[in-house]
Length: 218
Image (cartoon, rainbow, N blue to C red; front, side, top):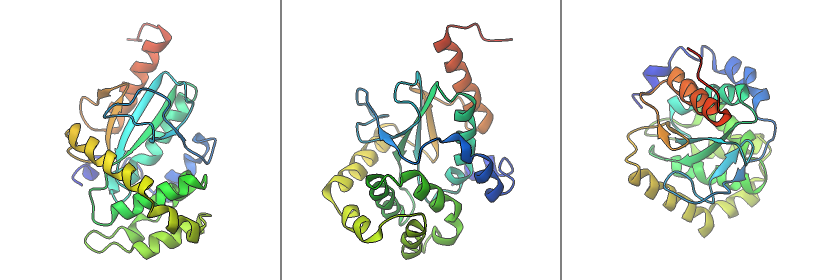
């Protein structure tokens, strides 16, 4: 995606960035969204962070998207700054070839409480499998297995009508919100004023201040 150029340089070395941010997600599972449904949040949406957090970050992502990979540790760091006040709702926007299969892997991993380790492994090794125009999905499955996924069980789950419905609904919402690229963020329903790391941090921080009832510092 063209958004990749905006974030190149913010994560100097992928391995270091993923390791440095590892502590910010305390659990290796992702729950679901306990709130009224909308085009931004669905009952099936994976949620990371406190269910009752006052600030909701919604991210539409594509497992094959380079910018999504580079933003992953950035989002973790922002949430680490506000651990009790932020939660991340993940929505799927599988726009690249083969990304729908990667989403099926992630949803199957969620059923085994392996969502975060599998997501992180697919992002970390993304250059090895998410080759635009020729994705190596067999390698993506092997990487998920390396992250602890029961592959035989996951392949059965991945073809289920339930996971197909998740993909269908998320793509319908992608069209409804007029998504133009990935990742796309909303914070408490508000879109970023412009795309970038600092813009995301500032919008989250402003919403945290607002929920605390504080006066923003000048």
